[in-house]
Structures are given as C-alpha cells and as structure tokens.
Length: 489
Image (tube, rainbow, N blue to C red; front, side, top):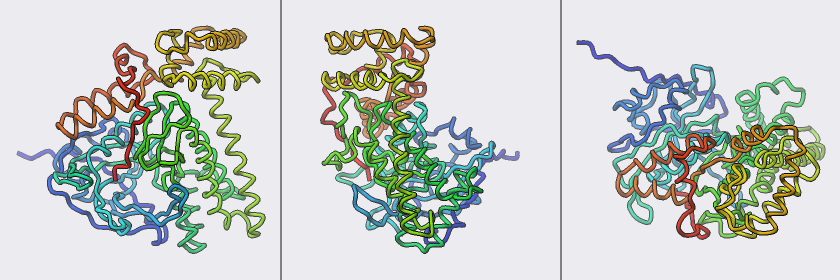
C-alpha cells in the first residue's frame, strides 16, 4: 500500500541573499536532541499556505526545530547594529536563523525565522539558545497584539528541544518560529552606515523600498520618500501601543522594524493601573522605555534612522541634514494626530472639536490620581457601568462626565453607533501580567498548556465583550506595581 505524503506547503525565496555579503552570514543548523511541538498556530499556518498536519508530523517538527532545512531555504543570520539604551554597539542575529521568505497563496512575502536556534557568528559568547517561558510569552503577546489590530510579527510555533538551557538555573530549551514582514531594522541601516560602503547603504535602501514600499520606487526622491513612509508607520504604530496600554520594554533601535511591525517581545507587558511612568523591565532601571516615554523614544530612534539616510538624501551634506530634520518634525505631528484620533474613538467621539484634547487629558489625569485601571476604565465608559473604579464616585469625575455627555450630544451619531465605536476601540481583555504568568508557570513547571490555550482563546477576539471574557477582566489580588519582566535571553 502506497503511503500518502502530505506536502507541507513551503514556498521559499531568499531575496535577502541578494544584498551585499556584509549584511549576512550563511550558517549551518545547530541540531537539538529531541524536539517536540508544544503549540502550533494553525490559522496562521493556513494563511501562509502551510499544511498544519504536515507541520505536526516528524519532518515538520524537525524543520521547526532547525534540525532540517526546508527545500529552497538558505539558513542565514542577519547582521545589524543598534543603540541599546542609548549606547551604540555591533549586534546581529545571535540566536536566530532565517529559513527564507515564504510566498503565500496570495502572493505575500513573510520571513520565517527560528528564534533560539543556536550559535551564530554574532552570538558574542552566548549559547544562542532560548528557554521555554520567554518563547511562549512572545507567542501569547504577539498573537494578542495581532487580535488587537496592532501591526506585529507573529508566532507560528514553539517546540521544546529536549535539552536544558543554563541561565540562573537549568530551564527547558525551546525554539519559536517567528513570522515577519521582514527583519529589517533601524539597526540594519545603522550597521550599513558604520561598517558598509556607500554602495552597501544604497543597496539596502533600494532593497527595503522594493520589499516594503514599491509604490515609491519611481519617486524622484525615493530615499526621502522612504524616510517619510517609515516615519508615518512608526507614528501610527506607537500611537496604537499607547491606546491599549502596551509597554514594549526595550525600544532599542535594533528593535524598531522598518516595516512598521512590533518586533521582539522580551520584557514587554500591558499596563494595569494608569501611570505614564510605568516600567516593568528589570534592566530599565532609569525608566528610559517607560510607557509615557515611548512616543519620544520612537522619535529618537527615527532620528537615528534619518541620520543613516543622510548620504542618500542630497549630495550636499548640510542640505541632506536639513532635509532629514524637516521630516523629523512631522513625526510628532503624525503621532499626536494618530493618538488623538484613537482616544476620541475610545470615548465615542467621531469628529474633531477643539476641546477634545482637554477632555481626554483631564480623564487621564483623574485616572492617574486615583490609580485607575486603564483597560477597565474605558470598558466602564463604553457600557456606562461605574462600579469598578473608586474615582467614578468623585465630584471631579461627575463634572467630567457631564462635559463628556454634552460633547457626545452635539454629534449626529446615534447612541448605538457611538456604542459600537467604543466597543471596537476598547478591548474587553488584554494579556494581563498575572494571567500570562499563570499560563507560563503551568506550562514550564508542569507541562500543562491548557491554561495558556484558554488564555489565547479569550484573547483571540478582544473586542467581543462576551460573558466568557468577564473573569479575565479582573485585576490581580496584589498590585503589579512592582512586577518585573525579563529579556529572557
């Protein structure tokens, strides 16, 4: 009897290898002992044109573990640099392997990268491995971000390696398959400027335009257009982070993707109590990447990107710098516009009025003064339920609510339309820190993935506002004000 072979559906190209060799190192795999699939994102696999059954089979798991190379794949590690907490350094994929670029049935192109796949020429003394907890954490948060409608890399699968990884203690090793529009970073351009030739920088810029911004390829000043497009995407992205209370945790320039996707979910977390100074990362002792600092840090990172393009913007260096500086002014304007538009939607306002910003700022001020939960406050406003937060009973809030109601009354939209706008702008659930930790502890310590699976199911439709989501809206028994996250390297 003939055995039926299920084709996995891999359809890889390797356009990154067309760049000058300075940008990459071809690598061989670092096999792991006993890979085991612990979670597979079947809906993502389907959208990529991949067969889930084939990925679950032995050969599929071997590919996800880096033990086998996909037909058509060219394993490589990318070189890049970055400003880490403001300090410039040489970096690169120290624990990641790029299989290639999957071409979907719709003709879209996505990087397929293994994170935690072992040492590369850029490992700088590290072991190149990852542990199970951080890989599952990225899976949970990145999928939650996708469901929230925020541009993000995604997670296709996590496999355990059957090996222990030494950190402070021995922990189970794991590899995550990350799917991204690309892994081009601000740090990639910084690397080109510092260690590449002029032709290398131009080759990288041309490749980036071709891959992400083909509409500007024939522009007379295409490198200026590139700067404009990257600024536009980052302004929109960071505004979306702020609107849901997401804290990236490590906004180094190597963690800013040119595509405009959120990338690298190391010490990230979602804010409970509203406070612009909120920071969870154990390594961010000065609060450089605190919630309220994310918009200006985005501008700082983009300024570093603009500096790399100066040689391409104009033959006259002084004129090139002026061009870059003029464009950077637009970032603050674009960010503020995106944020205000999003905040208006969160309180049901459709059209712009001059007093809107003051209304929003006053609400946030009260929330900060009374340690109000960010997500639940807007959920309460959406459904006109004011039991959960103490500050709802204050005279200050009563006056604010009267102003808000008066503002809504001058709109032509019906109450039903306003409710729908707020429901679609205010998630019922986000990955709260204590719930994520419960899921990770069950998985890592007990091999119980059911807690994580239930959490993922709830987070899949954050704007559904169902009764099943209700228990996931509760706050932790103790404040997470002193909660810490870790990079997980």
